[in-house]
Length: 143
Image 1 (cartoon, rainbow, N blue to C red):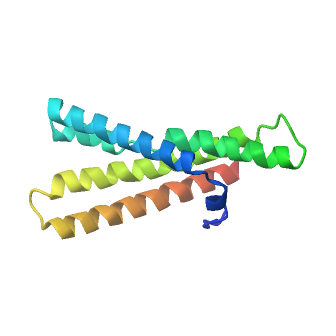
Image 2: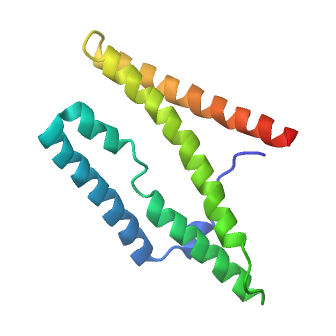
Image 3: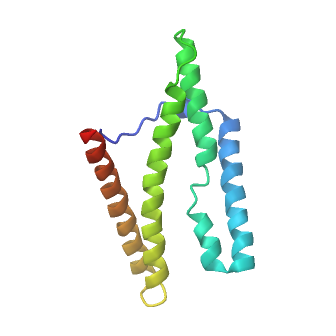
């Protein structure tokens, strides 16, 4: 599987869908801020790793796939749910990478230069995410 960018979906996205994503992201960020105020920044920061727009994105992916199939005359397909599930799988892989980012930043920020720490955390996120993606593809191909 090749990773690619498909900008054609930007034309399909309505402004209300962007607003929904913004609302989800803002709500998750606000909840993280309240939790950080109440229980400390370490606890609140855990919630910032939550893929804030995923709930909105999953429903929109399913809706777009259903619309595509309806245009060609197909109904009652599971393609939309499968596309949303595939996106959830990718979100999970990226989130595991974010855990690595958070651990590196948490441990190194008190003792290292901030820019060097963030760069190191970025590298850990990238390496972990790609490694998890490759392992997923390796195990999936063996099934």
